[in-house]
Length: 100
Image 1: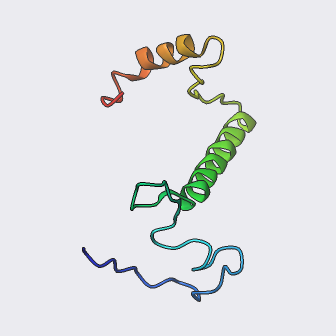
Image 2 (image 1 turned 60 degrees about the vertical axis):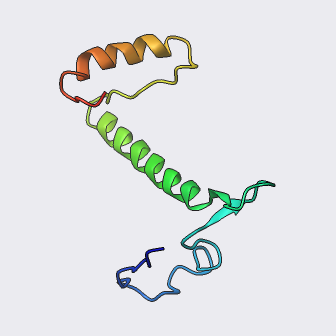
């Protein structure tokens, strides 16, 4: 197994404690053990990662609307009309974003 080397932090190791600490989130932070499996799953860092990503998305959309721009956002396929709205985005943006 390769050893992981982290870059030095620009602040003290314990600057974010007790909210974020080596005890609450660390490398290998999966917290669910399924009987019959030797590898834990369900890393808690994903909750933090997704929360940060969604907060950035919300703030970007808020600032766009504040400036009179309504940003295109993907709709849930489970919501009424979601598939149709997303199909329109795909038609518009697929020529620009090849991986869609």
